[in-house]
Image 1 (cartoon, rainbow, N blue to C red):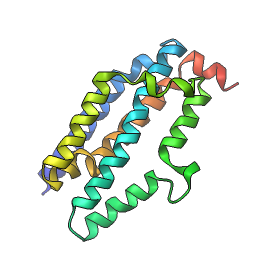
Image 2 (cartoon, one colour; image 1 turned 180 degrees about the horizontal axis):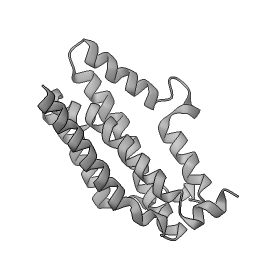
Image 3 (tube, one colour; image 1 turned 30 degrees about the vertical axis):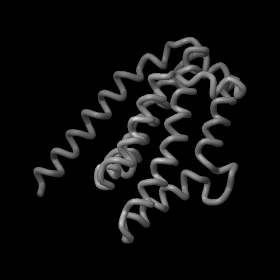
Length: 164
């Protein structure tokens, strides 16, 4: 059993390193480039909610289904539209000067294709695979990348000048 946890720890460390190294460039990009990158993540939050709802629907009754339903409720703002994660993220986008009128038109086809592929896998493959793709796996990776993203973009001079 300890071998499993050692593997899990080393995988987490490797994933953190990859996220950190890939997102380091956020420290120096011009503001318009940051905005374009940030807008792409918006689509992940929207698709994630739909995929998570489908996963909750497909899982058998039990603790895992209930846990993922709690995740879904949190993503949806626990009944508050203003607390829904897509709304919160849109507010963040506006705070860094992104134009809300252009959000949907800014979707990169390759980004949407990947998200659509994940959604198709959620429907076509086993719910167990879905837990790895969008359930617990999605929750873990999302937090890892968001933390690394924040760590780097908050050091960007364009972002720092907005906070003064």
